[in-house]
Length: 130
Image 1 (cartoon, helix red, strand yellow):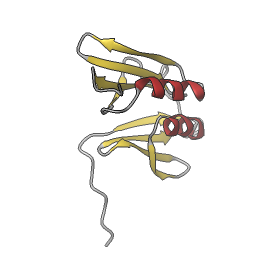
Image 2 (cartoon, rainbow, N blue to C red):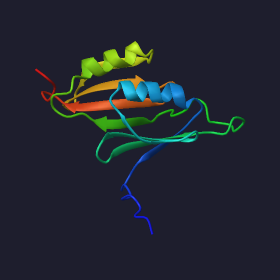
Image 3 (cartoon, helix red, strand yellow):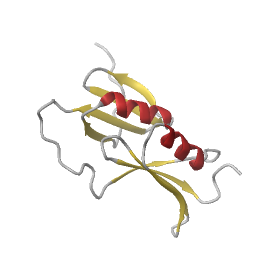
Image 4 (cartoon, rainbow, N blue to C red):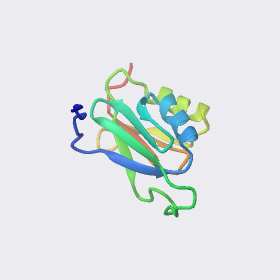
């Protein structure tokens, strides 16, 4: 019997329409593709920080706006430039907010993916490249 991969204690699954466009953005932002077929895309930002993109059937209704009121957050470690991530997102045409310092001692960048989901990269103040 095949060994199943370890189950993550928590993960995010997003319903999408266009896997190709979504994959282009997430790859530009440094996500690694762990698995991909015509319906399912498993991405990893860092060990344990994973995202599942599931392509909805062509005629299936999806809620609009997608992700309203939700930020999908990823912690960014020392040595990572939020400014560089913002530029990479802009290069593939993604809307960007920030990066900006927050009163709760983080620097944050929000990138809106092609499906309308908002991805929030969060870094402790003072942890970025210097």
